[in-house]
Image (cartoon, rainbow, N blue to C red; front, top):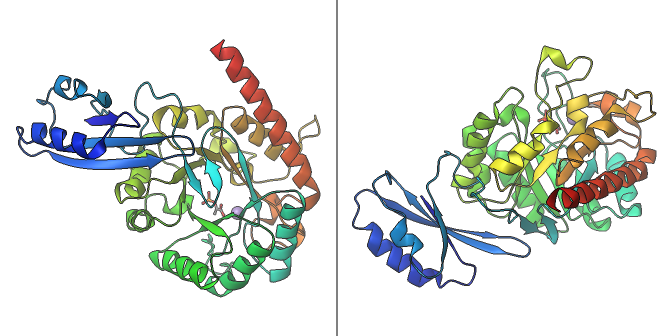
Length: 367
Ligand code: PEP
Ligand code: MN
């Protein structure tokens, strides 16, 4: 059962009153959660245990209680409560992650040289972007392929980010040690930028890693749906992060593995953007690069990657993760799907137009 308080309700007093009422029932634990967004703060009191015989009415009658719901899903912390129209979201390093805007995280699949990372970031700065992706620890299919530059590149990567006004950089972590190393390097560099920890598709059910990402509260987490996970499985996995204390999570769709995806790398699953938005309070990201996986162009002249971006943004995605490279042919990972820098302003304009279209159709639907 979840008891949601009014924003201005006296939390401590209500917690006291609810605690007294709950003590009449055996084996029920109370936990309080606060979700702090850009424009709103939501406090929830969760009753954990068998609450079937606990009536909701006495709680509903308390002044300051907004609503009480019996939770029917297992991913209770990330789930969207019935009747909640706008998700709370969160702010990290001055960037607001919620449903009111869309952020383009354009950057390198894998950081290969300082020069390339610099070129990429300078292009972002020229175009007024403050968010990027930079792969440092690369999980590769073959152990003989380039595995990323790893921890030694973090000091200069953070320095470059600071010089170019990057506020949030998504970095994939594959092991608890990586989280520690990113946190330490960021602190030693004086935090000139921010990092969003990316949990990749291969680690979407690495529960120990998910728990570690949830135990630290400094960095938000970008959780990618596993390659062949059902929505239910992926949301339960994502709940591992939240259940450890970190609810600053973005959920990312990146295509699912299927022989039916041909000729694309994965089957684009962006029709699930509104599904994730309905089921959870999480901002939703789309990754068209790993979904489409190639630079093919449709007869209308647009790259398939652009079309996939459009499919996600028109459904209300809040974040787009796209791979670029200043010299795509030289990329040491995923060269076949890297966009060249001249496409950056075009992609930005495209995202902006599609987002505007989404806002317009949303208004029409509401009228
Ligand atoms: C990536 O974004 O670099 C990546 C490896 O993607 P995924 O985990 O979705 O395969
Ligand atoms: Mn990649």
